[in-house]
Every structure is written in C-alpha cells, then in structure tokens.
Length: 123
Image (cartoon, rainbow, N blue to C red; front, top):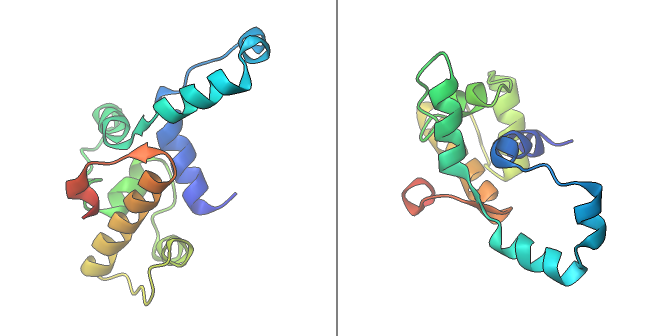
C-alpha cells in the first residue's frame, strides 16, 4: 500500500458507514454507482474532526508534518521525501516552502481521488 493510500484511507474512513452483506447483495450496480458518485468525502471536515480529538492542536491545513501526525503516519524527512516523490513534487528538500508545497500536493491528490477539499487549500 502506498503512503498516500494510507493517508487517504485514514481520512476517508473517518465517516465510513458499515454496510451489511444483504445491502450489498440487494443493491444493484446502477444504484451503487449513483450512490458512489454522490458520496464525496469532505476531507477538511474529517481532518478538523480528527484534530478536535487530537492531543495537540495541529495546523494540518498548511503543515504536511502536522497532517501526517494527525493521521498517525511517519512525518520524518525520509517519509516526506518519499511522499513527495509519490505525489510528483520534484526536488523536495524539506524546507518550509517545500513542506507547504507537499501539503498542497497531497490535498490536491486527495481531491482527485474522491475527496472534496476547499479551493483555498489547493489553489
């Protein structure tokens, strides 16, 4: 599983619902497709909810280190460098500007993979 997938799974599962086997069997493919299109994950709301429960008040909106801490992932330089390569941030060196760019790149990828992210966080 990729590093981004781990992050995505933790954020997206924050409001996941349990579905019984009977529901899966009786739901037609067409109905399931329509529900999937409508079901968007509110990334900011989920992260805010996670932050409210966290021992520290983390600035996940701009800090990749805080975002990674919030979802319980490794925030070391090596982990961030690997994540940067995974999401296409070239020349990552770990500077403050690099970390802000990486945070934005991760949020952009989450928005492309089914999450809704406020425009001010990705533009």
